[in-house]
Length: 205
Length: 291
Image 1 (cartoon, each protein chain N blue to C red):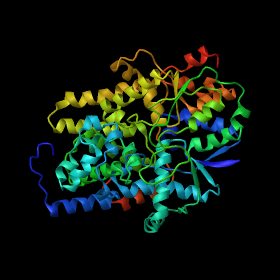
Image 2 (image 1 turned 120 degrees about the vertical axis):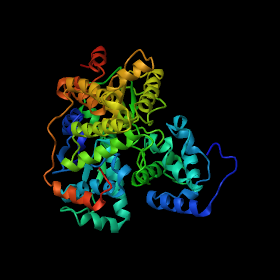
Image 3 (image 1 turned 180 degrees about the horizontal axis):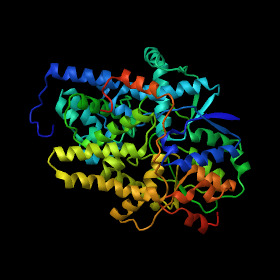
Image 4 (image 1 turned 90 degrees about the horizontal axis):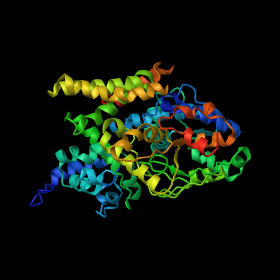
């Protein structure tokens, strides 16, 4: 938005985006009056440039592509500070979750692919045992990262460096006996599978 | 007295020590923790980033099990599990259509009657009634903890009211004071450690942790105390990296609240498994002659 000399506003484009985000996130974006209390409390705002108020404004202008591909959406730590302080109860962290889902559905490469890979791997691991197995989960996460590095031309070295990084963290965990190899599997796994099925094929993957 | 207990995945894996401590400490306080039978992962902070249905449905299955347990209260020590389960219960109470949709897949249906308690909800009421002082065999004199709440214990993605002050909670301080410790006043008690960003966006997370650790030092704390396994894990495990990158010379032990309670009650560090921390915690306890 920064470089826009003249504001472009297309009613149709903005209406459809506002409506989609409002309905899916359950947040009343139109209530935002740009007081920026959210921006003042955002722990990643300085780094992302885009603060919650800016994101809401972006959506109001119907800038779909920018709304899905900005650092706030992908660096948001979901601390809920913005929403707790918002005088109009708008939870931008929820909006960010919705935008992540929309990005995935649009099959666009996430701005921070590791963030998306992390949450995908977590849910995938949960679907396997009903509980998260930390080893399997981190394994799934690293496989996703390595695959991406190979596909994007980063080569084997980048793929291996990525894996090495987490193995390095695993060593102190092993020392402190804080890694568990045996998966903690629930008995009624079919119930979890049914819930995943009902959710559609959007999760994990 | 028995209460229902949801440990969650962390307390069965990397933060198993917290599970062991909870059972010991609450046992001393007269509460037997009855683990929910066949509980599942709550989806943590990942489910809502992929699928809004699963984010409600996964904790809902546990709520159904808890409602069928015949017990009236459910303890969830992990902040993330606590937050997601509270949110699920709240959403289901407002959306009967979604509740029916989820219940149709569950063998134990959500009724919505179980009262969900965070670990502080229980400990603060015990402290206020004198239960903690009564069970303590020593005072934690010399301990100056920075009480670290993190995000998910006090803030929710929807309108849920808690009994503590959201911007400056005092529950953990109340418990620490009952133990004879001298908690410091500081600015980062409800700031975010980055949680999963420690793995998927390390620069962001290490920076957030550096601010927390620096303020702890600046305010004269000699340790942190936490209730969330993710917060404890991050500040404990990544402190080495944070210190190196941000040139922080000293280290601060990161205790679970149950470790402080356990020490005061006379359990040994080994029984409590405090020797499984990444940042040394026993040194300070010895220095203060608490162990």
